[in-house]
Image: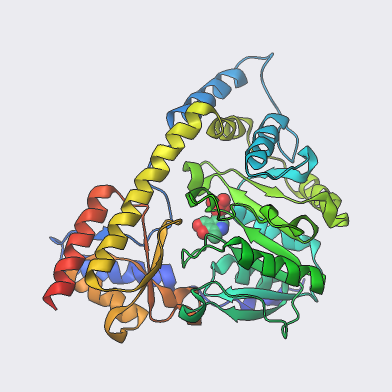
Length: 391
Ligand code: PLP
C-alpha cells in the first residue's frame, strides 16, 4: 500500500485554530469581558418557516408507505431541478433539466469535480482565496499558479495572457474580499477561457447577496460561458442551509463529454441528497420562501451597512459589504493582519479573521462578516468607533 503523498504537500491551516487559541487564552485571563465574534462565515438565523413546513410535510410522507421514498435519483429530484431551472430563467439563463445536478453543497462538488480533470492541468487561482480551491488541487498533485487580487485591481483580477491555465477558479461575490465582478470583467475571463481551451469553475455561493440588476449573478449571463464554465451554487448562505446541506452544480451540455462524465461520477460515487432536504430546498423558491429568505438576507445586509458606515466614519478603507456578507478592510496604521487581530481582541474584544490566512495578498487586510446578530454588530462597531477615535 502506498499513500497519496500529495497530502503531505498540504499546508497546515492554522488560521481558525490560532484564532480559537488566542480567544481562549484571552477569555481565561479576562473572564468578565464579552467577546463579539464577527469572524465566522456561518449563518446565524434559523431556517425560514416555508422551508421548515415543507420539511415537516416531507417527514410525514416518509412515515406512510404510499409516499415513502427510498433511494432517489443521484442527480436530484425533478421537482427541485425544475425550481432551479425556473430560478435561472429569471436571470435570463435557459438550462435543461439534465444540466442541473443537486448536491449536498458547493464544497463537495468543488472538490469532486476535479475527478473529471487530468492531473497535468495547470490551475489558476486568485490570491487571496477560499482555501478549498487550493487544497483540493494539492491533494491531486496539480500545478497551481496564482493571480494577484489586490487594492490596485479592487480585488478583481483580470486575465493575464502570458499565463497558460487550464482550470480557472472565479468566486463572485468573493470570499474573503466581498468583491463582485461586473459583466465586462467576467466577459474577459470567458474570452480568455475560450481562447485557451480552459474551463472556468465559477463559485456563485453568494449570488443571492447581489441586488444590483446590472451585476451578473450567474456566469451564464455572459455570452459564451456555456461553452467554458461550470457553475456551483448553494442554499447555505442564501437560505441558511449550512447545517442542512444542499446545493447545485450546472454542467452545460455544450461542454461536451463533461456533462456525461459528471453524471457518471455522481451516479457512481454519490447517492443523492435526502428527500426531506430537497423538499426544504424547493420551498426556498416558493412565494413565501422567497419573501422569508429576503427578510433574512436583508437582516445580514443591514449588518453589513452598519459595519460599512462605521468603517467610513473611522476612515478605514474597505472592500465588499454592499453585495456580499464579507467586509474586507485594510488594517489601519500599516498593522499586519495578526497585529490588528490582537489589537481588536485585547482592546475591544471583537474577533475577525486575519486576511493573511487566505493568501499572501491578504496580509494587511482583515475580514469581518455580517452573519452575526444586529445587536452584536452594533455593539462591536460602537466599540471600534470609540477605540479608533480615542487613539
Ligand atoms: N464556496 C465559498 C466561496 C464559500 O465561502 C463556501 C462556504 O463558506 C462554500 C463554497 C461552501 O458552501 P457549502 O456550504 O454549500 O458547501
